[in-house]
Image (cartoon, rainbow, N blue to C red; front, side, top):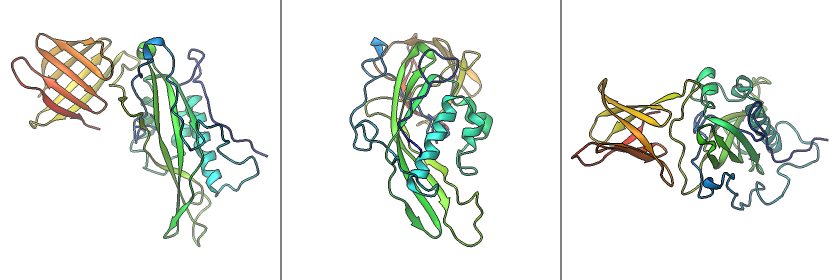
Length: 282
C-alpha cells in the first residue's frame, strides 16, 4: 500500500526549511519560472498563509487514494509530480529534469538546474489530480500544485499556485514502455494574485543578468549585483542604479533614472523622459 500525502520538502544544506520551478523551471522554469515576491507578511519573516482551495491542497483531503493504483492512472500521474518535487527538494535536478517529456522543459539540463539557484527553500504541496483527457492515442492529466519557500536574497518568502500537465502515449500498438509512462509536458505555476515573480536574483557569484525588449524597439540589459543594477543599451552602460525597498516588485533608482516592475514587466525611465514599458526576453 502506498500512502500519498502533501509534499513538504527541505533543500539539503539550507536553514530548517525547504526550496519555479522549477521549476520547473517555470516553463517558470523549467519553464514557468516558479517564484514570487513576498506577500504583506514578508516583513514578519513568515511564509504567507495559503488561501483555501477545493483541490485537496489546503482542505485536508488526501490527494491520492491510499489504495493501490496503476501507474497509468491519474493517481499514477500525481505520483510522478510528487517524485518530481521530492527530487527538487533533494537538489537532484538531473533526475527531476528526466521526468519531463523530451524537449518540453524549454531548456537543457544545466540551465534547468541553474534556474533553482535563487532559492534557499523550495517545497510543494500536491493536490488532487484531474480526470484523464484522451485523444488520438494520447493521454493528458493536470495535477494542482502549490509551491512555497524563500529566496536566497533577503530570505524573502514566496508562494505560487498552478498545475502540472502530464502526458503519456496510450496503450496502442507500437508504443514503448517509456512512451506509456507519465512525463511532465508543461506547467503554469504562477504567483498568487497580487504578487509578482521575483526579479532576477544573484547567482553563486552574486550576479545575474536579464534582457528586456522595450516598446520603443530598444533592448536593455540589466546586470544585478547585490543591491545594485547596471543598465546597458547597445553595449553601452546607461546608469548604475541602487535598489529601493517597495511593497511589491522591484525598484532601482539614481539621479533621475528608474528601473521598476513586477515579474516579466518593467518600466525604464531616463532623466527628462517618460517611462518606457519593457518586457523580459525569455
